[in-house]
Length: 111
Image (spheres, rainbow, N blue to C red):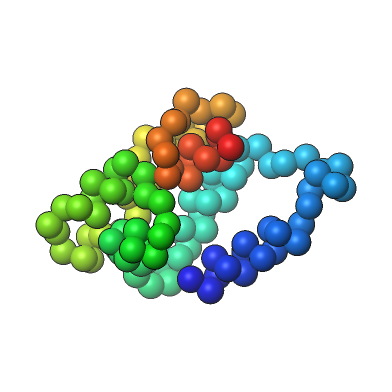
């Protein structure tokens, strides 16, 4: 996605530690991530989990299970994070006990 590349380039240009800035709390990152994905979903269908994995992006264990299921691609374009307990924990706790590889909420809290 072009937006992903833009954000990655912006992040590479920003060196927070060199300027003495603090990183945003994981709880705030989780809320922002949820809001961004929700906004993207209202603008049109998301990329399917199968496409996302084929593009080389990591999936969490639950997304991987959905991607493997023999179900309609429309279901695979929905955001499974909306019903995941990792999202709830990530948005409400400062140090959420989330340890699933590929889970963005886990990466915010353990990265």
